Length: 262
Image 1 (cartoon, rainbow, N blue to C red):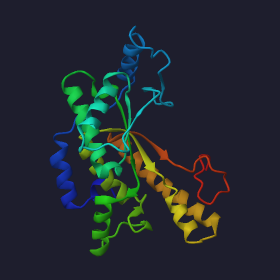
Image 2 (cartoon, rainbow, N blue to C red):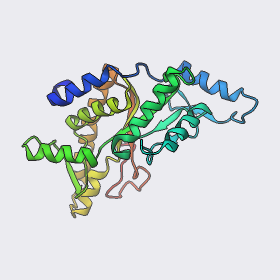
Image 3 (cartoon, helix red, strand yellow):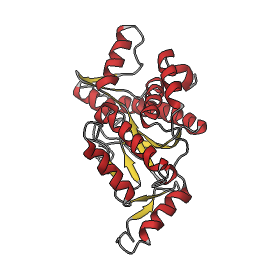
């Protein structure tokens, strides 16, 4: 089933209405490289070693990024800080669907749109990273309402009273729609699964001990999520995808470890 077919009618209508305001484009090798060169060649700044390649993507990013964990629309200081960062050499922004209950993404989108409109920093010179997986705040209320209506998201991990987690493509499809709407972007440069090990953490806390079986299911879920992401890459809605995990450096036999080699 396509991502479009997975959305509810109301969510699809919301996405359509907001998408008309979205800023088109994506980060490109040429524009991110030019952004870095501009600051490296600035005699008033010491940023010679401040940039590097983003993996094998061809994109160039500042070695220090701007983290969106605690920013939202409530304080103009956050807007000023992000604007200053983009104007002074930082072109890598990290946020998530659950940061500020979505308001972090809204702020990021607003600042990028304003700087692009005034030609101070172009959309194609900025790398925007966001993450999907946590079910908190409004997302939790949405998931609980669906469950009550008999339309629960599949494979939902109910880790705690105020925090659920999900990697199922149906959930990812809804979340990507909402994420792009909040960012007011047509394309997300990097989309990451946010701490997918919550599936393993939940099993560990519930004293489920068949680790080989749990890992088999865990990587099946990751593979299913990656198939969805590949579809979104083909549609031009994301450029790159991956995993953001707190347990990727844990020993391989740790019950909550996310293995990079599996």
